[in-house]
Image (cartoon, rainbow, N blue to C red):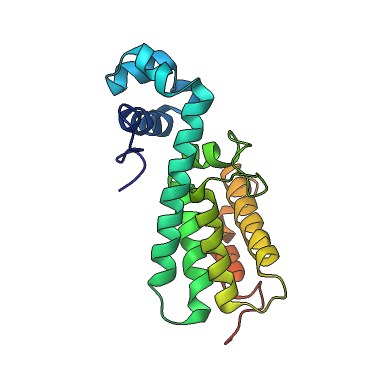
Length: 192
């Protein structure tokens, strides 16, 4: 179930977050206005502002939901393989698939919500879970002295690849080769 289909457990918030997700994916974040959101979610504008202080709070709620979906996709990919050397390539592919399938949500997660960082004092559990899955995938198959730093490097590499690919700055015909190289060779994988 994607973030566009599930709720956040609070009355009215479910429909608002799901509607914001759908609007952002269909029209970009510029299409997500308070009035349109209330109308599409079938809630009173006052109820929208009771639940969310402003548009940034809605974007943050969608981003948190995006991290939950990303984490679920990474977990599914990690647990679907048996060989430790196959874990990172599977998780990497799931990460890239999510980022390319949901570019507006990905932007909400990484470009529009600076407070959702691993360095924050109270990082949301969904952000920590996504990082934890990347860490588990890399430490299962790579030789490293510092697993957290390795996971940060892996995340940075994937994020950079997503942003450069989406921006048209990398050769499209080399995408599969890049992914294969990053998945199979870059981190000194064990059992290779």
